[in-house]
Length: 606
Image (cartoon, rainbow, N blue to C red; front, side, top):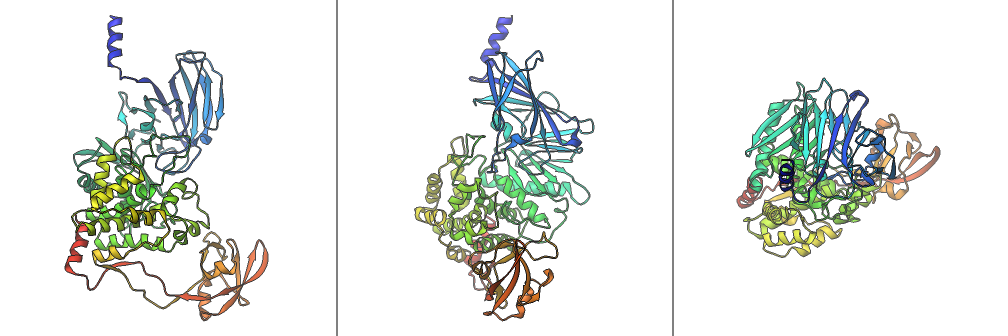
């Protein structure tokens, strides 16, 4: 009988499958912000090596997760301690004595309220796979099973992974799935809804009387339906929206879930501001709005197709221990930023005017960035690992955000395809065709995506792509404006003084320079970041008087500015220059034809 059972076990086992790793996750003292992990790992060799990822997919920065690990231990099946050593910053080698399996345990400090990290406190835990779980080196298809032991006060857990046989247990078919499926544990309200025939869950940690959970779930369902229609269905059985109302910011996409941070006040704030893309280089929004949160939901959810399944060829299989370079983040992130606000308008969650505001915001931010004339967007994508998440006071002078420029390129590319095809096709068609061809395990090359767009447009777009992606030539908005019957609102008001100086809000009562724009009077006059401005033309200037005090002087004159630089006093001469503010606000032309208005309406309501 034993031989028969063994035979059936062998023939039923997946071809090439390996013994799984089994993790037990505990929170014995959650108020200390620690999670304890025990892993049962197959061995069978004199030594095995485990590693922890140094970055997480979707966030292109080496974050060194091993720095949060402590108290690593290894034991055999009888509980005897095994010798081990660290061989790299994120690797642990264990001498197994040729045991069939070993047990390793370690603790992870989890107090990083960011979508790339981990958080544990007395009320809940939110864990990412990459900074939590070690795995065996060597790769291969290996199942990873996770079981949570919750504190007595916690009752719920949820993940995008398949549920295991025991309560609070989860199964990932490989480490890629484990690294891409966050886990929540706590007591948050979980709003379940069905959209496009599939189950969805909105986890509102921190939901209170100011956040209408059922209403927010209904809004999310509308966004899901828009994208399901666009792509002809949903490529999953369930999807989880982890929505942490903690006051932090940011969002990160996963294969069938997303982790989002926002303010508990956001959903109740209906102030009409354009939805901002979750761009790490952009200034933080001080007062989040409902439209801003919905824009974040839309952006992260569109990643379900654009990057999680339709991905640059370089982004998979992942090397979790080194940078994974690609020049296509303008498409993966930037075009996603284009569809974020567009889908809100299509879902009737925003107006046409709010959509134009969102596109105006991106164009204005791009055109106000001197770095657009220095770094092509493909290069900015390639340099994401050293650039976007590590900005300095000089970053805007030397580079651009592939989120922002990619969003603008998406707007122009969509209009171009529509014009070349007489409105019969659009960027929607190009995204669908690219998804059909390259949405599997292979991914696309830059040339392949360009070819898809050319095919849909019925014209070779190679030269257009070369200019907008590989050079720093200014973008041409004329074709887009003409197709939709739009214009940039004429500048209003009188010319304004321009210095190029930004000041810090972190030094109350003092005027400390925090940034200088290239090509401005202060930049050329030799002002430096961290200079403290003390007086103008011999008169003391206070924080509340800057920069309005300069309006007392006529444009074209030069004033003497007393500064303190590293405690040394010096005087610099600042020419006062007045410029008419550029306007990048999109609006419908007063003389727009009915045909142009119809094209604009078709963009919003395809």
